[in-house]
Length: 276
Ligand SMILES: [Zn+2]
View 1: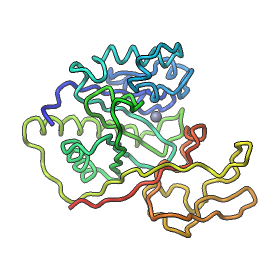
View 2 (view 1 turned 90 degrees about the vertical axis):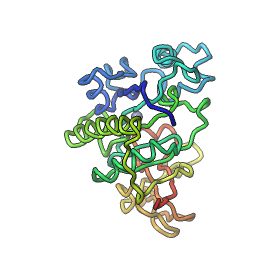
View 3 (view 1 turned 135 degrees about the horizontal axis):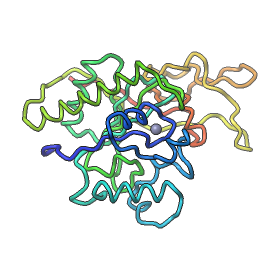
């Protein structure tokens, strides 16, 4: 990867994820969904962070977020073009117990190395790989040639948490310093670190009417990035009956994320890799 020069930091892509909303206001960063932030809602008409596939940007749907996505795309220099930013850092919150998770859309060595250094310097940082076909990925960060999404939790949407607020702020500024070090050929090397690669997401058990019929099992609640093995409890139905995991050993994340009930996601499953 060449020098990373043209950098955009943004928050409030989801208007009720207040760490990013207030960091963006504090530092003059891009407040992505201003209307949703003013209303303290995730979105007004549709999820802004699902509007940035090239096919979305090229259609003329008149939802508020579709119009805002086209506006941001034009403002930042256009996805897929030479003028697109080199790098976007997009700040989110999650209700899941994910600490500060750095989500990389590719395993680009500079960004992986920077993330590994941050994971080594701060406590409770996770590196999560979510490989994307960039053109058709709907995430805001994919406007840029490369991106990292920061997820900070657990934090209820519509609230702030001082510890997470200042931690995310420090992580962002450290990320920028390390980009500078990369640009100067002076990025330190870290060799022992772990990453999680997303395999797929799973939904809650539902009845034929689409109603949820079970809850995240109390033994799994808050256990993001912990090992889930065949036979361990994963859900509990409304009568208290346990539902056990029947599948591969994996590491769940986004467990019980509030915003994902509507998306049919109870958790995402990842594989763990140790880099040495
Ligand atoms: Zn979000």
